[in-house]
Image (cartoon, rainbow, N blue to C red):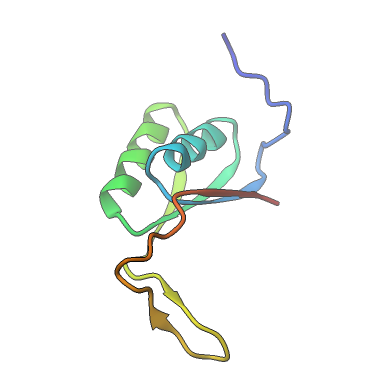
Length: 94
């Protein structure tokens, strides 16, 4: 059964942070519905797996690999502490 694009995602830019689990599934679904998806993750294997899934469905996803997450303010950045778990996924629509 075809999916109805009730959000009118065709050519809309979407940013998805986190390629594992729900983030990866969201990115692939958004791309399949015609959205222009940028997927960011700290794990290159997750990114590649989602891109492959999207290509098999006839869609394309732009990837960004970010190996180290940082935080800080006032022009300073520091690596995240080892015990800090970054957010697993976030989807932003324009």
